[in-house]
Image 1 (cartoon, rainbow, N blue to C red):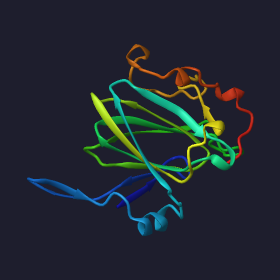
Image 2 (cartoon, one colour):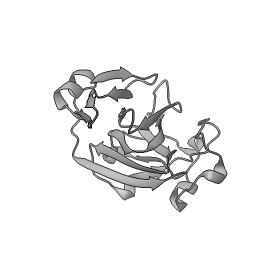
Image 3 (tube, rainbow, N blue to C red):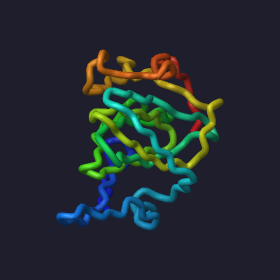
Image 4 (tube, one colour):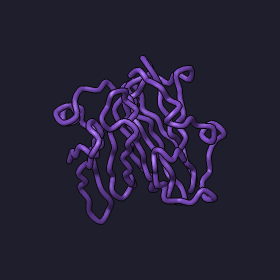
Length: 183
């Protein structure tokens, strides 16, 4: 596997090696020892999967306090633009984001540490999005940051009229209204 720390400390792009021929390919998508050597120890406790159609935007989500989550995300079918926004109190990159294209063709994965809001938008007809998390879902600690917050300046690639959002995602908070978060 190839590990590359991105411009925000703690966020990693991981590229598993693929072995292929005319029949297809084989890839090891998770190796705990190799992950810990590069990124550090993370105790993933659950795997999740979502499936979404073109234009679905999910995010920007996070859980606060003792319920915060680190995530290792990848796309097993299709293509998405994946976004991680640093919300760590005191971080020199607070309010900054990284944006990467994740696709089944590339096989890339993104590690997002605790203290980040996360979201993605589907760029293919259909996408399956898989992620490991290090904490359980706790709806009472959940928060949504507005995907279109001008202070974040995220280019979601698609125009607003192409986007499909849940009611929750339409009602996200502005970053300026988030005072302090514990992670």
